[in-house]
Length: 217
Image (cartoon, rainbow, N blue to C red; front, side, top):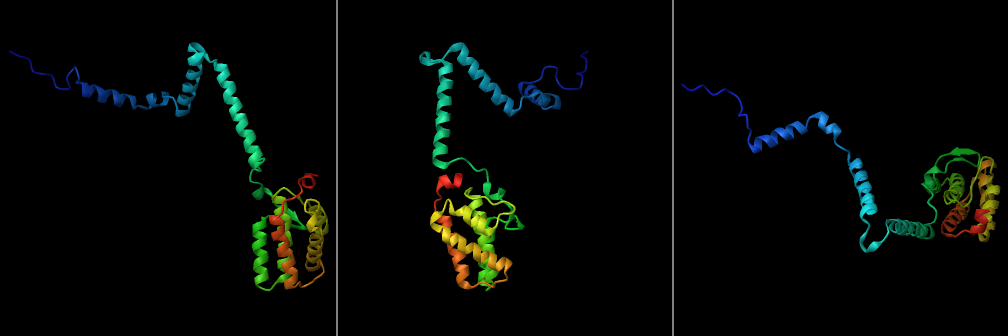
């Protein structure tokens, strides 16, 4: 008399069944938490590579230390070339320049001030156009790192500072400062020709290269 076969899966699973059971087991949280992160895997690979250099050497008998020195020299040369071609990075200086400008707290950049001046000129409000245009000139030079203004700096004081790196425009800078004071403090209405003086000065300064010795001083 034969005994009945007990219910349930066979004691010896098939290859496919064993693979599925193993995959299911490895997906449990405790196994996933123990797996190294991609950063850890990359770091381990770098460490193992350096260790292999120290134990087995490199082809041709080149010292691992020499390789590191060569790599460091190449990186240093690349940095030097970058500084020569592009200068010291200013770390988003344009967005960082703001604050008091000729007695008013103003967070606008030079482009926003220029747009406001042009809009006022189109509307025939030359007093506002001259005022905003002169502020745009000062803010632009500060963004370029050429001339910085501080609380208490007057329009004529700025013109004197800007005349150092831009000596050819010293007279126009002083004239524009006088136009700014006229519309800002003396109630002058300004004219279209006055606005053109400020507008053209802004354009010339944007294209001009400052005298670096005066700008640094």
